[in-house]
Length: 199
Image 1 (tube, rainbow, N blue to C red):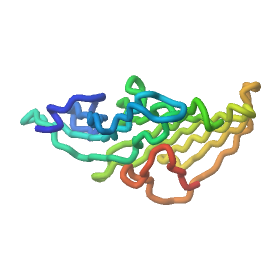
Image 2 (cartoon, rainbow, N blue to C red):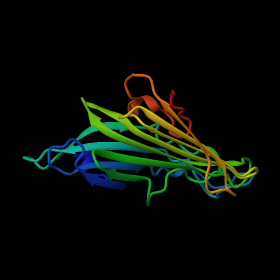
Image 3 (cartoon, one colour):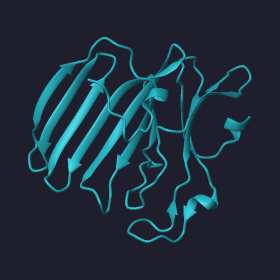
């Protein structure tokens, strides 16, 4: 079984509410051809551009085997900018949460960009799909000090946007109710750093 034998960052927990511990895996290709040893400019050297795969496998209790439910190549984007930090942190990048799992991505550049942010996606398995249950994005402009946070709860269809500044504890809060529509799925999001939810 390929998934059972795979090595990589993983989190374990019951995702389909059958009492068995399932797996969320983030695997990374290890192809030397995708590691750029010498290039001109700022940034990480050598620069590892090997792509990642997010995989989800459910455990079958009677047999003890895992069956692959989803293989996604886009949510955790491939690195293309040497001056940008790796968007996936293997320590906090994935986690099992109640009724689902969480994927966190970060954006920070040492040169060539002022905006830094982190985005957290929370998914749950529902009707054969991995639906987006929660979305959180916190952004800071390192030049102006302006901050923006957006939190969406797709279960309650409520969105909270907060704008402020790093010098102030409190910010301006605006609530919004989302139209009645189906929540996005993991497969429909695409690049997790570029996704912009509909409000």
